[in-house]
Length: 131
Image 1: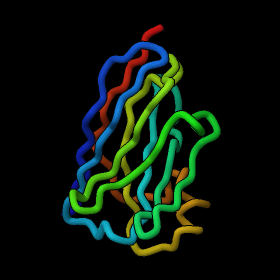
Image 2 (image 1 turned 180 degrees about the horizontal axis):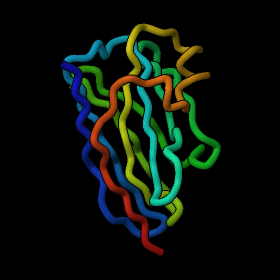
Image 3 (image 1 turned 30 degrees about the vertical axis):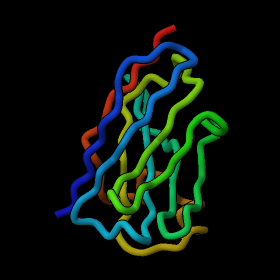
């Protein structure tokens, strides 16, 4: 059974930083497409960042480029999202996601910001940015 468990959310002031973690179990982590999404109240879920774990290939939404960094720690089966220079509009529930099947890095970079790419989802962790 695949499980994704996020943690690290919380309250932070504008300009601050947070690191979100997603621990996976029961999942082939070594060569996979994984991503982070977020959903603010009253808005649709949107892709934030994606990572092909086999080669560290990444992609980002324009709204977070240069501020957020997606990374992995293979030994711990953990995916991270480092948030820096946060803004009030970054306030949302953040979700970790994992794709079913093996795909290459280019495919993950192209498709990793779309919800229907992913089969497995975590329960989410809340990030609140105050001005």
